Image (cartoon, rainbow, N blue to C red; front, top):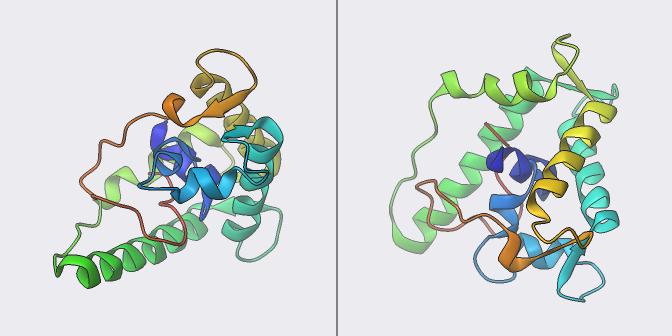
Length: 165
């Protein structure tokens, strides 16, 4: 679920999912970009705006839905950017997650199991995530409410966050 928020907010913003791990990004990172009014919090509206922008970015063919091929393409592009950033910073290679994990996002978000994620399904998943991360129930996300990243990458690339797995 945390990786899903990276997708939702991603590439920013999660997809973003799509954003917990992405929002917890090093430095100002995704959280700072999502906090468009600069008040130190990500409101539901800011979160939704980022989520909608992410959906538009993921929907490569502009048909109003995102399928597994579009997710795979976005994920691969993110991993390529991440690998280039890591190599530039330290010379180390990053590992691309195993392909068998890639379908889990689709299975969780595609509530009608038609093989496509619509804006409504994407929005509903994002709303659930926002509620989950809003630990104090104040309707906004603070940096300390963001989950800690658990994957092997030490930092996210400057532009965009990893699509969910």
